[in-house]
Image (cartoon, rainbow, N blue to C red):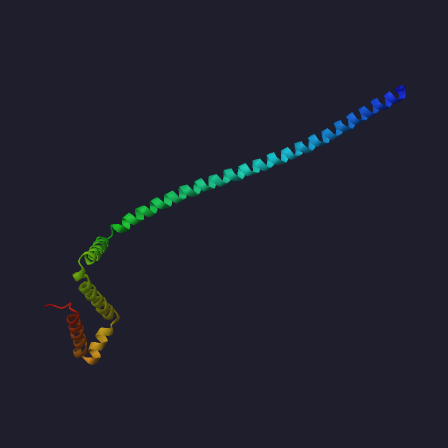
Length: 162
């Protein structure tokens, strides 16, 4: 197989055209990759700015919350030192002690609970004015009679004095 001058020339021109086409194609691909890379960089810069602003906002919010927390702590301490707060604290301590005592001394707890519920009911009736209205309308005999009945019921249940 002999190659003529013309065949060799066509082959060289074909290789040259292929090279030029390949070169142009690679340039287009490179430019598309560069534009894609620029897009990624701009996206990354935007994300970094957003993250930076978000972290700054979180830090500012954290500082504000710390200040608010400190102010609330000081307010709680101030309110705890107001008149009457010591008595409320002592009352809560006594209440806790009574609850513990009721758990540890079973004979005391049931009588105490009945007396406590009765006292609470009387106090609520006095606050509402219900008991005072009954006393005014029906006289003291009905209210005393209800107290005597309650006392006899307690004695029947074994909670009265022996």
